[in-house]
Length: 237
Image (cartoon, rainbow, N blue to C red; front, side, top):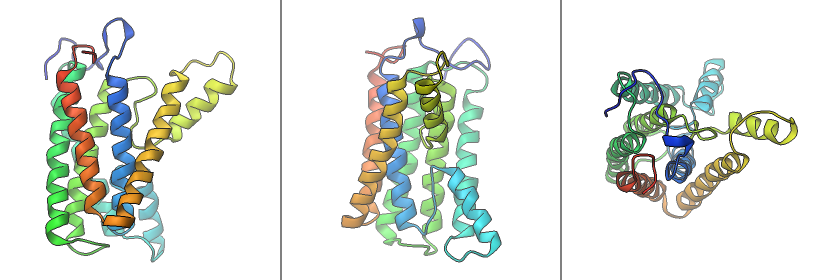
């Protein structure tokens, strides 16, 4: 991943982001979808939303029997490794935005493919021992995604896994006159994308088990990677 300005986040020429915006919205859909699969099919654990896992760890330490401390800890540790890896890979120079997206989604797709194949081969369900390997691969993939997205620094789309800050910024932009922030429609689309991903993931899990939402997540990430590969230097063809 090449560039010229060490430590600086990549920006598109003339302030435009081209295809980066819909690509990041597509990745936000994948976050909702994969978390639905993990939470419903792997023993009440998140692989994209680490805030939820920290809360679950607190519940487990307090003695709540409804969550898996091991699953949440596995996911959290794997996510951090993924984010660390992408951070180390891009720390020395400013990556070209579409190249960065192409690269980290390609890595993410490989990890998702491994998780999907393992889930299908082992018929993993709930908090079974084989679930931890699937959780680890999925969380690694999402850590890579979030680390890459953070480096892009597209206003309103710096988070593709949680929307608390997005909704807060949206409320401020709507109700606080003169409050600077990201474009309102981008914030709305981000929240809607996460919701739609969760809806699709839960729908598929209820009807076909965990492999179906993982396959959809993989297909969407591959689509995002291909889209970025054919995009121009600023994220637009």
